[in-house]
Image 1 (cartoon, protein in one colour):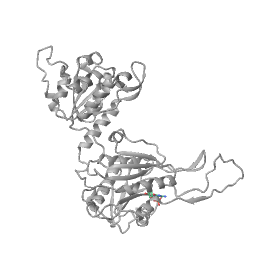
Image 2 (cartoon, helix red, strand yellow):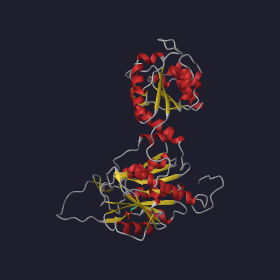
Image 3 (cartoon, helix red, strand yellow):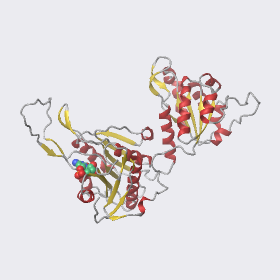
Image 4 (tube, helix red, strand yellow):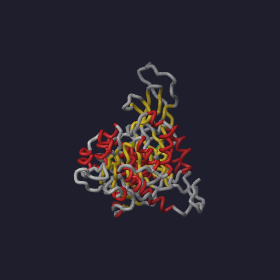
Length: 449
Ligand code: C5P
């Protein structure tokens, strides 16, 4: 990269420990998994393995009936701890404390939870070790029901689930699909990976959330500009970087409006479970423009990561175009520059853009930063190996409106997203209290429009 007047910030690459940085793991978290007598108990093995793999300390407690579906030895081996089932160890008569597990845990997860156990939990029955653990638990409780369609739908079960919700238990909604009975419908326990994502989302929420209360717009992917019903102009963007940014901002507590064009990725299970990313599909530059204009006034800032076409066909043919002459010219028109338009009307909001360059990188990026009225621009160069479209890594430089610049080494996109979120967070913190997003004094109670 060529040198520009941008002052290089040396200290910025130091990691800030406070931020809910990058990919959340379960390192050091203590989870008690309660397993009840459902056919879905076999999935408990996969769930234990997933939780342990992410660094959680897992202790399993089973109901007597659960032993019919999966051997305690399997779960003891995977969790690396004995699995109590009875109040007494039948071999040596040793007392299994009926409350100690509940006191030890950071989270009590009951998966699968049968209609019977759910009913007993709702009623406060304590006739097995899992239930005494539930009643004595001081930690949050998550329940993943598993039962047949009709049992799940029954008003008694629904009432019991409502009773658990009312005392703050989280319910991991069962999925739709084929049930062990052969019926098809809701009742199947959510897949272990999805449950693990709910667990991660739960701990992520409990972690510091520096962006809680902020609404942020993120655009991602490439746009699609149609010539006719079967052909279009697009680019190589996959949406990986934009999705990583949306996921990182949500992990830090922000409500994210993700407006995306054509992508080849989907939102992580963790981001889905957090419920903080609202994904809107806007395929053409025109659609993305409309969606962004509608969303941005309600946001505190935005990161424009989408690769928006600069030109679109003047006309989109309603039917497939037929080949005719040897040569054919396609008439194109400029698309709206969304970032520039938002930048001109951003008030006190923070706006970031991207610049993917192939030459004169810093100079081009600095020009875009100014022209589009951005607070900072993230530059990636196609000349850097491992950077740009399609890769799982990126090598970025951040150029700020104050004339400073930070170069980052090549790293996974989710970590690059954390660096970008750090810069955004710093910009938002700078503005905080000074004025509301439209430049007016911030309301006292911090309420947003
Ligand atoms: O001018 P250029 O397309 O290189 O600028 C890239 C930046 O501008 C990106 O942040 C991109 O999302 C944004 N952009 C936009 N609307 C356009 C073109 C680009 O928002 N029509």
